Structures are given as C-alpha cells and as structure tokens.
Length: 473
Image (cartoon, rainbow, N blue to C red; front, side, top):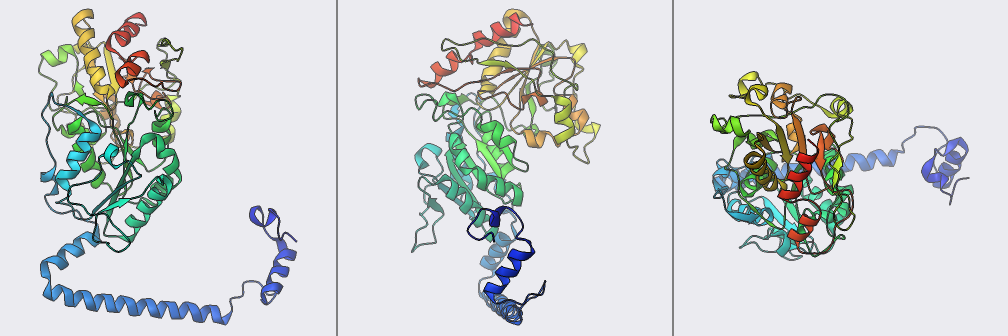
C-alpha cells in the first residue's frame, strides 16, 4: 500500500489501495457510494442554514423599522457600494510641496476614514513607518470588535491571509501596511487575493534603495517586478502626493486587490489631480516645443512599442561599488503584447484630446518613470532642454495593469514608436521592455548609506543620467 509514503500525496491511490482504504473505514466496495448518514447530515445543515437566514431576515426587518438610516447604511456596506460623495474627502496637495508618498498616504487616510466607515486598517508591526493608523481608531481586541485597527505583529503572511478573510466576509474594506521588501512573505496570500479578486489594499512603503541606512536587506530590488507579474493584482506606484490621493481612489473603487507602493523619502509635488492618472499612464510634460505651444495641459496619452527587441544602445555604467546601475531592456515586446495586452472596449479617438504630432513637434526623447523617480525624470528633462536643446517628454506610469486596458491609439500616442524612450526606476529592469527601449535600473543589491547618497552612487542623479543619455545618443 501507499500508507505512510509520499505516494499517497502525489499520485492516485489505485484500485488496490482504494479498496483497502474503504475496508478500513467500513465502506462498501462499490464505487461512487454515499452513505445514508452523509445525506442526513447534509440535509440537517441545509435546514439549519435556512433557519439562520430566516432569523437574520426577520431581525433585520425589525431593525430597519426602528433604525431606518442605520439600516440603510448597513445595507450599503454589505452591498459593497461606497458612500455617495466620499471622493470629496480626498485631500488636494499644493504643487511644489515636498512630501514622502507614505506621509501623503497617511494624510489621505485621515481624510477619508470618516467618510468610509467600513475601512479596517492594520500593519505588521510597522504602524509608525507605514503611517496606517488613524487618529480616533481603536484597536480591535479579543474583547472589543468595535475598533477599526489590527496590530498584526511581525506576521506578514498571516496579515495578508486575514485581509482576504475580512474581505470575503463582507462589510469591510481591509487595508494593511508593511515594507515592500516584506511583500515576499505576503506573496502566497496576495496571489490568492488576485485569484479570488478580494477587495484588499496593501500599503507597501520604503519602496527602493532611497530608504537609505537600513541597507540591502531592506531595500527592494526585484519585488516590484514580482508583484506586477501576479495576474489580477493592481500595482500602483504614485509619483507624488496628489497621485497618492488618486491611487487611493483607484484602489477603493476597484473590486480586486491593489498594492500601493510608496516612498520613504520626500518628493516634490509635481502634479495637480490630473484625471489622466486613472488611465494608468500620462504625460506630465509633453516636450519643449509642445509645451511652448500650450499643449501640456488636459490631454490623454499612452504607449506601445514596435514589435521585436529594443535596438537602442545599452546604457551601462557601474557605480563606485561595481554594481551595474543601468541596463538595456531585453524583454521581447512582441511576446509581451501577445501574452498580456488587452484593449479596453468603448474608448475612441475622441479621447485623444489635442495629442501632438511627434514628428512635427520635433520630440527627441521620452523619459518614463514611476514613483519617486518621476521627479528625477522631470529634472533630467529640464537639464536636457536647457543645456542640450532637446525636446523631452516626461511620462508618469503609475499602474501598468490599468495602462494595458487602454486602446491601441491611446497607447501609441504616449510613447511613439519613432522616438527614443528611456525608462527610470530604482528597481530591476524586468518587464520594462513592454514600454521602453532603454532602462536606468538596478541589476544588483542596494547598500547602506543615507538615501540620497545611495541614489547618487547607483546613478540616479541628474548629471549622471544626462551624461549617459548624451553619450549613448
């Protein structure tokens, strides 16, 4: 027999083993036989469930008569609908203000918590760092379920699994925080969230080598690529405070899991609340000549590259520690397109508002970035335009998954195939071949030093990127 062997787990039992198993249990030798007592138990459970349901309906009808408004609110929460007008609670941040995106996230939560009572927060022993606690929240305890915050302890996997349970039970929108590097511990439960499409929100802070002194054990490199590879998981890496507010709206209005990837270090608020953000990618800056013509306002854009491998020159220089900080993108874009490209129904050419003709505009370069590197891309563009007379477009690409849903013409207008495109992200370059020709990325581990110094050493500095772009033109 296969008893007490690995075979009982990894292969069919077979007729002989199955007969022996049935004999030990006292089952009949016939196949596909269900004992009468099994049916009796099933029937009793169905009756018990019907009794519970009837009692709930009776109790709720009585509650509704004496608590009309509260009953309506409970029904709304259980239906999964968000409160009307909740978006009015979203804060707006002043352009030019320097604020870490994790701090902006905390401010967003403070503003919207009162408008969305079904929000249930938490963190894996990193509450002050993730900024996920809201003033006035009580902790959920063994003897107090009136609270709205769970102290999960250093239990990232359990936390992510509990988030799924809270979502599946209904009436809750759970969110919880952790460092991006620790998403590896959460990954099995996050994958199940994507499979089941549970509505959960992961607040993943300290998102790059820019976190500084904690060093390479805490500095994420491959985590972004790993999360983006999970089917059905939205990964949003906002560039500044206003993008954070819009990212929270996108997450709350999405019936599925969302990972908000946030920076520890301060970044300048570059954007207003541009509705193009909700398309997954948009231009912060169109290009020098386009901007002079007044074309950098309310316009909707995106991208798709020519099929085949990128042909642009490798941007490759090593920092002082010998880590290769820039890499050519080698993903096969045609395969990317065939495997994962989707066209969003219902979009038309009318949504391409005043999209410029790139050839006529003389566009020389498109810089594409996410998160804190968008601010860097903006500075690089200014340097290239003022000192090298280049026309440079700057694109923020906060959510790849949403961007893929846009129609092809919309995508082609943002990252045109006949213009050189360089991506910038302080993480590994895996996956970026879908969007760019060349990549400023990290193909090694981080280092322990102040965040600004680490970014400088790894090539994420205006002068270094400008030099590489010019040298490899």
